Length: 437
Image (cartoon, rainbow, N blue to C red; front, side, top):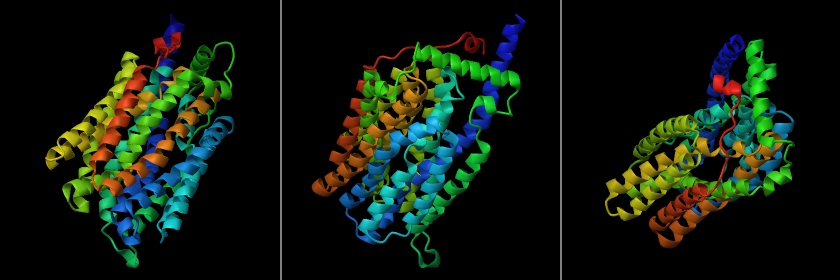
């Protein structure tokens, strides 16, 4: 009885200490990452006009980021798992921050394309490295909630980035346009945090001096037991992970979802400005609405998914709802106010699918195979970043209407939601210690 009580105490204390120590910092890293990722969408409210870019030029430039990102995503994730996710995350942050700041110096189309390509190379494998890191610290029962805290950074980054962009786009310091300052000033925090990462993050639970010996033993044994339960008699190879039809199916789900997500992310400031005819300040203020909806939805959906141990519907429902909202934008296109409401709702609801989706591959594979599956899914999905924004630019230039763009995004989300419902996954494996906790 005493042993059971001790195990329960260690479980409660360890889970609390780990969450308090790691999640706020990882959350901060992802906030900075996402602000740097989406700042080009705000810069475009002035940049394209200043540099003479068409919608297709801007869309293709956005896509160049994903060309290098795709090429380096899988090798980077494997390096993170086999070498050190902590060091790899730090390297990524320092290099992407420097490239982001330098993007503020571009003057023509070729420089824009090169800057985006280098940014993709610098940032590749950031998300898989973070996910690999979290799987070393959080058991399956806590993984959706941990991921929810991570992915809550996406709407929070919009809450911070939207008004910040509104302010910076209006400045003209030292005769330099505001959209250039947007890149320069938002790239510097990543460099600083990259250096801090090396000092603050701990590689594995067994190295954590900030846990007691009993807590270290509990979390180490808990994670090891779950890894063994998932992989069975032997560890699947990377190639076997790539041939796993469940992983391939999840990659297809994420490709459809992210193509729509990225098409929306990089164009929604432009969508809102063209729909409403409002000022840049009003547009950036309106974008705080989906960010707030996304923050609440991400946390609630991740928490409820862990509570019920249900993954598929918690992943599919936000995708289906977002798709429906985009169709409503088209149906109510003549009523500008309603169209904007549905656009903001669809953009916000979508965020909540992220944390639950990323719990799915960890229920199938572990260790290097899991890291490779993260990278495979992310790499395949980033094709959406290559084609999605460009297709929107092409449709806008070709049709001179936003309706085809909204239909394209709606179909992608609906297709992703329906596909995930057809994906079978096993229930989370919980050890006796986990139940005790």
